[in-house]
Image (spheres, rainbow, N blue to C red):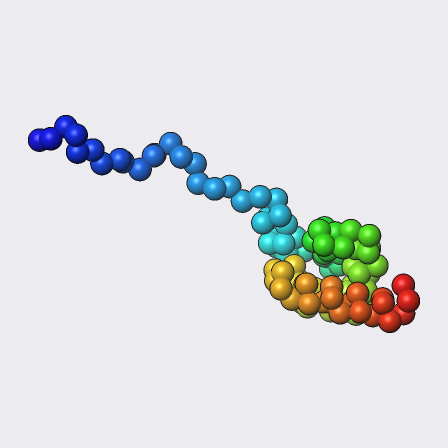
Length: 103
């Protein structure tokens, strides 16, 4: 057996990549909101949306969150928590409405 031939074994001590809080927020809030009592659910959904919207629109996150909460039902809002692409589309639409209103 040739001692110079060496195959590297996979590093068993390497930890798998841990999800970041930004990876967990949408699914966490979606699951939590789905399990909450109806009177608390909408506020929880709003908190989750605000956290996500704040990433791209920190100055307008409160206004955009309020617009979404006012204009959509809970099922649609939960879908936004799970779908970054759909949320971004709604953020752009809300920004357009605010711009047209001069806000």
